[in-house]
Amino acid sequence: MAGCIPLDSMRQSTLECLYNQSCVDAISFQPKIFRPKALNVSLSNFSLNSTIGSLFDGSLFVEIWKNQSSFENYFTACKSQSLSYSYES
Image 1: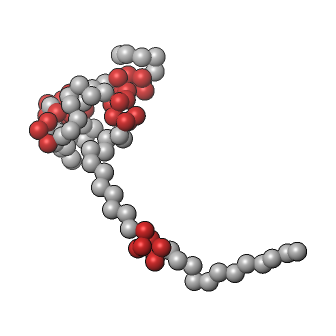
Image 2 (image 1 turned 30 degrees about the horizontal axis):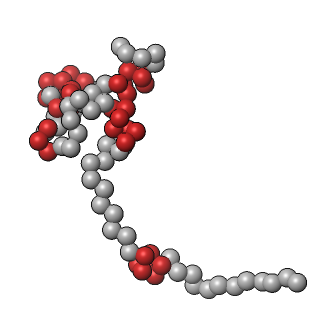
Image 3 (image 1 turned 120 degrees about the vertical axis):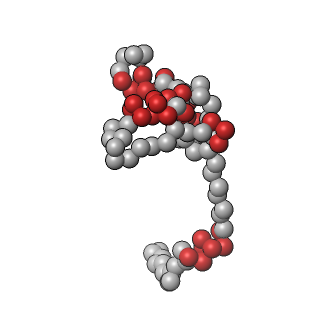
């Protein structure tokens, strides 16, 4: 175990186990009910040596972020039905 607390150990861990089916099977809590599949290294942007901590800090495990902003649609959907104001002198 590396680090002072379990969270330190987890952050220093790499993804190697998640790319290995035997290791995924070993850490699965209920393999008879749901058997998760190991990651495919050729389909991922994350290397085996990436640490959990660096992925949380850098990208939160998001490989691709597709943002299609439309301010016109936003303002159309969120426009006010009415607007009023008061003025005190």
